[in-house]
Image (cartoon, rainbow, N blue to C red):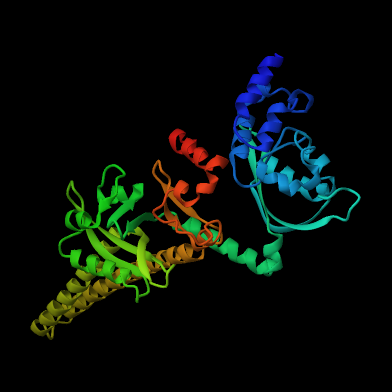
Length: 436
């Protein structure tokens, strides 16, 4: 039994890092969690995710909310590390128990709680010294146990003390919440990217399905224009792409065109994007166009239907005028013709309102996308393929952790060679290969 516990700990806590080593050496049987080989799978999974995270992460488990944390949390603990490993969180942070206990009850009831720039007075330098005033942004999430009910809490936190000193707390919170809502609403759009240097485009699954592309290999721009864009629209699309690459321009891309699918049929799409430029040496060079595609076929059909209705209304009016001339003096015929004209006008008005609503929805969607792309409140990056090539980098990510170094089109190992020995690229390899 003892050897099984040792083997279980060695397997679960395998890898580099101070806390992993402490976890392998710790007598977990002496803690409320018990031997590692008796831990439920949900606790094992949560522990593995926390230890593998580069952000300060904590797992609180069981009725006593016993702590298990990663290397990123060590500096935040101060003198409480490594004593804090494997003890109830209320014992570790007794000075803020009155504030945290209600939060834990909410999370264990199934609620995810996000708190930004919360002020805590923490004894991180020892109980005999004055507490540190620390601002923290935290996200508490319930961890379901084997029964499906929450049995633990996952906590990710960021020490934002320095940031709070540079801005007003309430304004930052309102802005963050607004941008988060925009990001959620914009998620319905298909996304794509065009690498200018290689002249190749990549798409997400939604765009590939819309365009009828199979597999996930990049597609050359000319192949798209020649095989998927309607011949009558290809010149407009090409002109919009050229305008977006103009170093003297705004770097904006927006165009509506028809997609010709391989199996037949056409779809109308509205594409929008923003060009990323390299300005490192003072010369502005286009690097990458990132954007979205929205299926607006229904909108275009509504426009066509409205045009048809208008044409029919004009034809009906002309016919009515002709009939009125012929039947002048016949009151009954004139009354009937006027009734038909009113019905046609009412139908035309209803269709016009429907088109206005569709146009308003499309414009709102495009505004949400632009706001999300340019004003994301956190550092965001997207890496693709087994080599983890940077295909999307937000301005905040370019500043930190990017530090101004070139990222787009480079692998994680090329962009950050210093993290190879820290296990981060290997962790990404595992996530990509296993899908976990």
